[in-house]
Image (cartoon, rainbow, N blue to C red):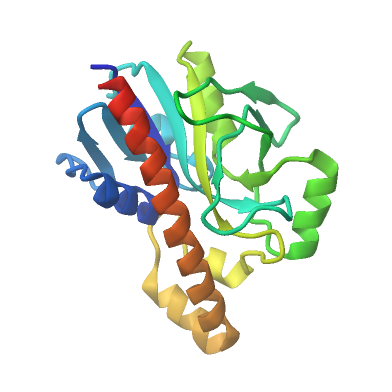
Length: 226
C-alpha cells in the first residue's frame, strides 16, 4: 500500500476530513492525527508553522498532499469548487510544481500568502498580480518540505470563500497558532460586530462545501493508492 501524507492547517479541516473519510484518530499526541488505509492525515497549523514538529516521527510517505480550504481569487470560482493547481506560487516568488493525480486534472496556479486576504479588493489585487485561481497560507511551505525530501507533492483545496467575499480579520483571529478555534474569541467578535454572525455562518457553509469536495477527491486518491 502506498502511503499518502495529507497535511491540513486548522483542527476543523483535519477533524472534518477525518470524519468524512472515516479515518480514526491516532493516540499519543494532543494534536490532530488520523490514519487508515493509504491515508495519514495530520494538522500542521496555520501557515504550516508546526509542520516540522508534527512530522518528526513520520515515516517518509510516497506522496504528500496539501489539503483543506482556500480563498478564491478568480471570479469564476464558487464555494465548494475544487482547486487542484499545477503550480504553487510562494510568497517570496518561489514556484513549486505539483504532480498529477489520477482522475484529478490540474489547472492553473495557487498563491500562498502570509496573511489572511480579508477583503474582495485585496483578492482582486492578488488576482491581477499573480493570475492565481485561489490562495491559501500553507501549500508553499508544505511543498517546500516535500521537495527538500525528494517526495512528490500535490494540492487539493476547496473554495470556502469566493472572490467577492473576504475573511474578516476578527473571524480569522479566532484561530490559534496551533490550529484550534477559540470559542471565547469568537464570542467577543460577535459581541463587538453583530454582522460577524452572518459572516461566520456564510463562511461555515462555504467551508463545509469545500471540505466535502476535498474529501471526495482524497477518497479517490486513497482508492487509487490502495
